[in-house]
Image (cartoon, rainbow, N blue to C red; front, top):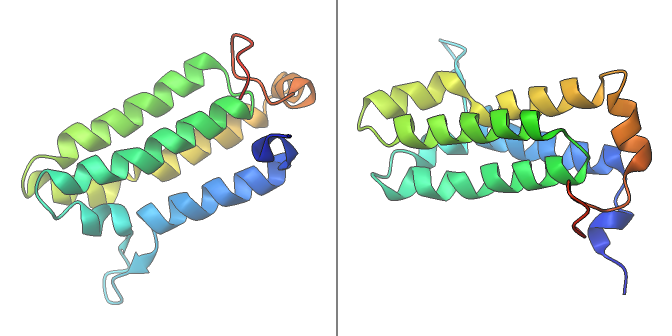
Length: 138
């Protein structure tokens, strides 16, 4: 039985990650102000539970980035973005305003794209065999 994730191409994975990041951070737009926000901001309005829910797709994005061969340093930066979004987003009112402008999922996608576009990032793409860093099977 083959792993369905190992059959997915890099472009398919990146497209799916981009789509999730867009839904979470920039899905909607305030017409007059032009401010974009997503489900992360909407769900974050629920005290306590809202930001906890949006950590799940953030963690999934980090997992997928690891499967794409992103370096641990970049994965750590992605985890920090997700953690900051969770911690600051949990503060009533201030956290909701913060969620409108921080957009951790979009930041993480920019990190993934920058990593995969590095000249030596090509090595990670070529060596991808469905393995996580450290040789663990994905």
